[in-house]
Image 1 (cartoon, rainbow, N blue to C red):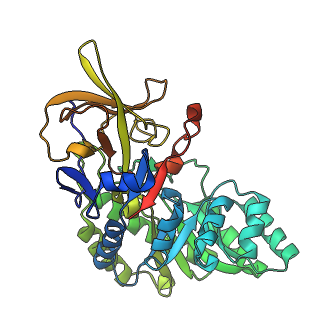
Image 2 (tube, rainbow, N blue to C red):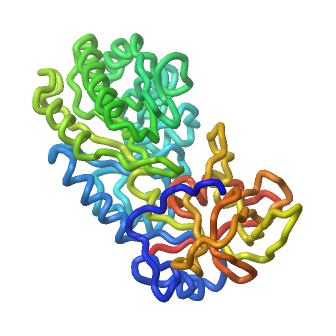
Image 3 (cartoon, rainbow, N blue to C red):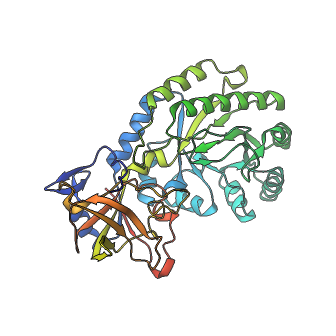
Length: 408
């Protein structure tokens, strides 16, 4: 049998059935009528943010990266819990506006912003994290035409990356941000233009479970921000140091040592360079805030045997949970945390692979894992489904359509 990833803390069973925030999944499915279904735990999200604030320096602001999960009820839940929101498209700007979020609390990053997106952001006083000098000139031209003062920051492509990162966003040639050596001149141009100067966004990587690497990168980020501000001769009102905090997905993964990260960041901020004395520092996180709070539920349609192997065929699949299938950035496929939700307390009885309903061998949610004996009508739970699930998967593939979503 191949091991399964660790089920996040906070999940338990009721009457032998997986419960989310105390409600059995069978009851949740009955409420919406059918699977596939994503369920997000508001209690787990609230607890994660509370734990993060308790561990981090009190002065640190927390931002939510909307790309992780833009489900509107979840955005409304987040609004009073975090200090800002980070978006990556005009579509996401519409989503946060629909959720009632003040656009003045929003920043917009992304290497390919269309003029219509720049115009909407400037008109609504969203902070633009500029990805190039050319984008800066486009933004200034649009702002002049609108008669608006744009709020402009620079996304910096640092000379380092986050060690152990699942996705490296900085260091070397990258489509993201402005190379560090070109930043001072661009910062001066923005300030001299009369725009509202908002500072730097420096994001080196994501999904790291190495506290030492995160601490090192945060220190490098603060040092780089101070050096660039000094070289540019500008103040730094705001600094987004990114996130990078990962969650355990796979066998052998262990949770981050959050206390160590918070202690070391507090020490660095207490002794920050003079140029950063008045800088508001924030961390931007998506996956870390919501990833472990989500569960993808799918029902077994068929149980079949082929050449001695058991396959449990579900009504879900990679069109909703691309990452769990191993097709979203992983090199070697490993099993996510997966369980038979309708037999949550039952012991392992057999080896089985859980597959989706698509006509492709890539559609595999669990590969030769150990499960209780399950059959038609049983419900499968894929954990760590709160981030990069519903909106990061090809839901239109083979005409399957979207999954249902609910926040409890």
